[in-house]
Length: 303
Image (cartoon, rainbow, N blue to C red; front, top):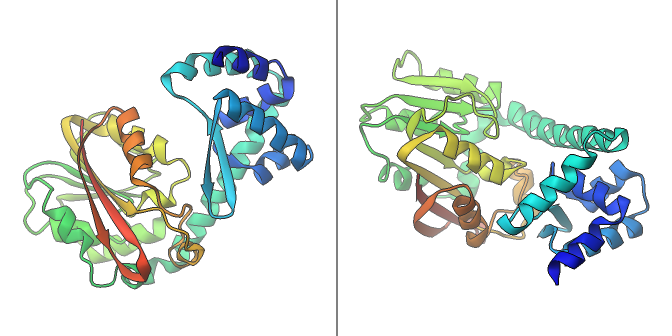
């Protein structure tokens, strides 16, 4: 019985400690080792037991395997109960602080990348997208008279195209001050566009603020993609729509170097699962070929 395997897995203090960490963030083995100060073989053995019990999930990203708590409905209550019982333990609290420092290092790496490439960003995207006009695909599905938020708006290219015929309020959000500065240069004196500094996982937006959200080639930069999708659900009005475009999963590590990605894209099933778990109703999925043998998925989902 699975529940017996799960209780046996949780009976070990090290495995309970690992679950507590991975309930907070998704990490690879090297990152976990740096937190718990154990040899890698020991950590891997405990992770294997947690995986076999169904309390963890894992996914391969390049040469690394990333682990996270399995928060499916049948596991969520048990994991939350177990973690709540040890969250005030000094060692466990220190583990979480170390894990957050790792996440901050990752975020700072991404921010440094964008602060450097902001003036050349559109050219870098062109290297990957080639002649494929992703904005044209997205614009066809965006209602002309409704409020739109472009998350990870970058230099404001899509906003600049929407404002010509759009009647509603346009909001652009980006975590890079340098990218937003480029957007302000490109979009001067446009009262219908509001630019905001903030992270997609913690949006500077009110609940149910907009009718449509666009996330175009953003998710692969984000450390916690599922959390970002949950945030989108929060800021969308009932009946609102999310348009999400991102790379299909691939194995080209050099692409991450060119455009500062965190992940090697995502499978169709991964994104659809995140959307469904966050409360969205999937409406359509399209797949398009771009340069270098890469593909982009465009998802449409309603709230």
